[in-house]
Amino acid sequence: MFDRYRGRPDAVRALVQDDRVHRDLYLSEELFALEREQFFAATWNYLGHASQVPNAGDYLTQDIAGRPLVMVRQPDGGLKVLYNRCAHKGTQLVSDPCGNTGKFFRCPYHAWTYRLDGAPLALPLKAGYGGTQLRQCESGRGMVTLANVVVYRDFVFVRLSEAGPSFEDYFGDVLQAIDNLVDRSPEGRLVVAGGAMRNIIHCNWKMYLENINDTVHPMSTHESATQAANQLWAGHGPDDPKPMAMEQILPFGAGYDFFDRMGGRVLANGHSVLGVNFSIHSNYAQVPEYEAAMTAAHGVERAADILQRSPQNAVLFPSLAAKGSPQAIRVIRPLAADRTLVEAWAFRPAGAPDLLFERSLTYNRLVFSPMSIVAHDDVALFESMQQGLRADGNEWISLHRDHRAGEADTPVQTVNGTNEILMRNQFRAWAHFMTQGMEAVA
Image 1 (cartoon, one colour):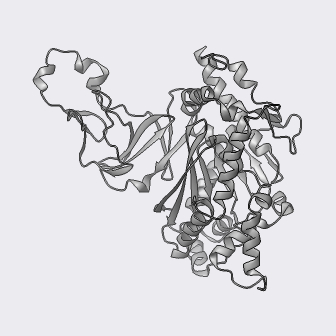
Image 2 (image 1 turned 180 degrees about the vertical axis):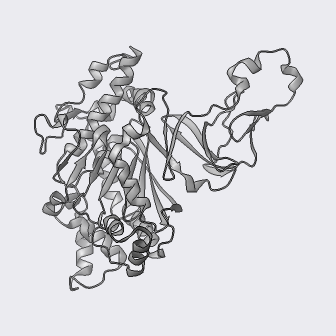
Image 3 (image 1 turned 90 degrees about the vertical axis):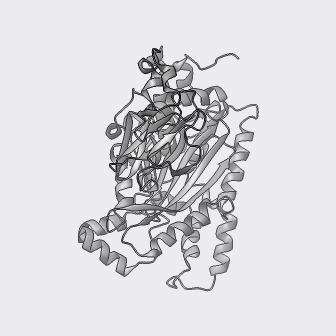
C-alpha cells in the first residue's frame, strides 16, 4: 500500500489548516495506525480510577492504543501499571475486565508466575533453564512495568512513550476540573459506582470528541427530545420543582444565545472547559444539608466556589471528558478509524447525600446510554457523517465559525460558547503530537 503519511510529517501537518481539517483525519486507516504509534504514545491518557481496585490483588485491564495494560493494587497499597503479557510467549495473564488475581499473576498457558509488581516468581521445570540465557534477557526479567504513570486525586493516567511532556506540563490548569469534581465530596474522595455504560459507535474518535464542545447541535439534533419534554412540562410554573429527568433534559433546548453566553476556555495541548460562566447543570435544585456539609469541610468561600462552578464539559485531551455536576465522566477509547468505544462512568462522592449519586446515574442513563433519548440522535448523525465524508467534491471539514487570524498564538483564552476554536484547538494539538514523534524518528 502506498504510504501517504508514514515518514512524512509535513503531509500530516497539512491536514490541519487554520480553519478547517481534511477528511483523512476521520477516514484514513493509515493515520489511525500512526496515531497509535505516535499520538497516543506521546500524550497522557486516562486508564482508570483507583477506587476500582481497592484491595491488594485487585486489577483492572485496559487497552490503550492497542497495548494491553493491567492496573493492580499492591500489597503496600500502591498502584502499578504493567503490560498485560507473560514474559514467556505473550499470553495475557488476566483476561477479565477486572477481578482479583490473589497474591501473584499466573500465566494460564505454561504457569509462569509473577509477583504483583511484575517481578518473576516461579516457573515449572526450572532445571531446564539452567545454563541458558533466560535470566540475562527480557523474558527472565518478568512483566514490563509502565514507567510513566501518575495518580492524580485517584484518577490514573499513563504515557506509553518514554519521550513526551511531563504530566504537569501536559495538563496544566485543566486539572482544576478534576479538583472541582473530587472536591464536591465533603471528604475529598470519589468512588466509581453503578458500572459503566458502553457504546461502540461506528465513527472516528475525533468526531465524538469534538462534539463534546459543539453547542450548536442540541437545538436541531435533540429537537424532538426537548420538544417532548417541553410538552410534558407545559402548564407548570417556572418555580415548580421538577422531576430529576426534566431538570436535566429541558436545558438542552435553551437556545443559541444561552449556549453562546455560557462561554468556553481553550488551554494548551488541546484541553478545554466549556461553560465557564454557567451551563445546563447550573440550576439543579439545591440540597441544603449537602451545602452545609460542604461548608463545614471546605469553608464558606471554597465551598461556594466549588458548587457555583458547574462547567458543561471539561476535556482532558484526548481521552477524558468530565462533568463536575453531575459527577460523571466519559472515556473515549479509539478502536479503529471508524469505530470508537465510549464509556460513561458515575461517581459517588463520599460524605454526600445519595441524591448526588442519583443525579449522576440518571444523567448517564438519560444522555449517554445507547438507548437514551439523547445519545441515539448523536450516534445516528456520527455514523452518517462517517459515511458522508466519503462523498466526492469536498474533502474538507469546516471549522470556520468565529475564526480569527492569529488565534493560535494565544494558547489560553476565554471565548463565546459557540466558538469552534474549542475544536480547532484539539486538532492543532493532534497535529503537534503526531508530527513531533514522526520528526524524532526521522
